[in-house]
Amino acid sequence: LHCVGHQDSTHVYSRASMASLASRFASVVGTRVVSFGGQVTRRGVSQHRNVIITNRPISAAASFSSPAPRSAESAPGSSVRGGRGGRGAASRGGRGGRGRGGGGSRGNGGRGDNSPQVKRRPRQFSDDQNASIKALQALVDAKAVPLCRLAKGKANLFLDGAPIVYGGAVETVSGDPQLSDPVVVVDHVDNVVGWGTYNPHSMYRVRVLQMAWEVEVTKKPDTNVQGAVKCDVGEVIKQRIKLAFELRETLGLVNDQNTTTYRLLNAEGDRLSGCCVDVYGDVGTKKKFAVVSSSSAWTQKHKADIVKSLGTEAGVTTVVWRVDAKMLALETGTEKWTKQSERSESIEGDDDDEDDDGNDSDSDSAKSTQENPDWATQVYDTSTLETTELPTTPLLVKENGVSFEVDLMDGHKTGFYVDQRDNRLNLRKWSQGKDKVLDVCCYTGGFALNAALGGALRVVGVDSSQKALDMASKNAVTNGVSKQCSFIKAEAFKHLEFLLEQGEANSYDIIVLDPPKLAPNAAALQRATPKYVGLNKRAMQLLKPGGLLVTCSCSGAVTQNRLLPDVVVAAAASAGKTITALGPARGPGEDQPLEPGYPEGNYLTVLVYRVL
Image (cartoon, rainbow, N blue to C red; front, side, top):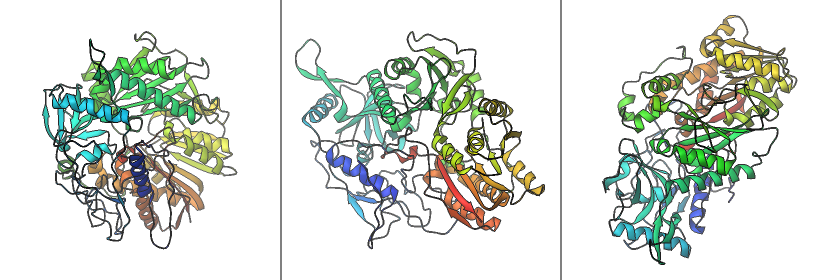
């Protein structure tokens, strides 16, 4: 299902509105859609009341009217959505909370009375799907399974595809489920919604694995009568990985000799919440390695199922299992969750000139791993499920014909930023005939090498990690561009200021800003926003008139609030520059699909401007 923006004399439909329209159409025809390209956003998902860069009003995505309430006997998909309340009428106003309320329409606050609305439609079911719903409902009615009961008005959020049940949406839990146990999710009158894995410690109370109409109905034990329900976590994992692999085949990534690395599992986008997997095909041995980034308790419990299925369904020979230890500490109750509203009161804003190298949670994760050896990085053979070792020779992968050495054990994230593949290729095209290109927060040289291969005469990469810079230098040699490339160890803010002090203003043709996550959550936006402004301001001052600024944010809080365009506008005003946006906001590639019901999975924004 493909939707495009439409504009006429009466209405303008935003991307967010069209993405939501796609979800509604999918509901009507009884199917599921997923978005490619990383730009599905629901305006105001993580808005922070103290972060306002401009006074322009912010519109929410399209509002939805719900049908009449269903009876207790009716099928899932037709109940009234409430709970979220309004999205706030003031600029960057709040969400209105996830409170229980009964509000029937989806986020009417913040939109004008004349805004187009799409009525919520009841989902259509096949006979087999109705049989699945009936069988799961029978277990619920018999009180034979642990239940997670949603508060009144919350069910439609999950029936529409949201893969995570937050603690605030839960009314009660019965049946005494333990950490990572399967539970059936029901609405406030015990109509089935789906099932998933339970976590009593986490704000992510249930990670939904299947909707009620997706469960497999099998024969009852010792009988020839249909009616038993199969809720097998291992089977769901296998099926999800199989579907994810088939999608990457469709996208032309699996057998591409010029690109041997890609995202295989994109957590909620591939319906395995808390699990990301990147594939790295070694050009030397022709073996396929995968790095799993595990950030949930349930994925830790089902590690063997994930490792095995990566081998059988995706052709992976070796799996490097890496843990987001900071997240796992929260998921297992080792550390306590803190409400963002409580955090925000303790965060003070910083001015543009404060230095911050932008390092994120790697050091915290390393500390947590030392405290819990079970979370240490492990390497597994997918055929035996036994621990093994990586080859002693460096792993070399290709991306659009460019060779990169990758450190799967200790490299940042999974070892390489596969999400910037398409954006790096664009930079290669733009660099033809350019004199000076600056790649700030260059890591192992992804943008820098593409600039040099595109024809730029002088390319400088800057990063605070010497280990990353050493690998970037090796990569430059491997690709034959070591004469054009140089790499400097420095903190981003300090180095840009240093260049200005050295009289290099108005001297660069292209500058790339790809900092680490400066705002790890919405509560950090107030502190991070001036840093983003300051970084972009300095870059603009260094660019020649007519130069290109490629500026990125990998913070979900920034992307979901669409803050980066406002950041650039503020930076241009502060630098006394005039800017022109070159195309719409960009994001990761098609191998990072998004679930339309979970725009919170959207994290990367890449903007390109001409600066005068």
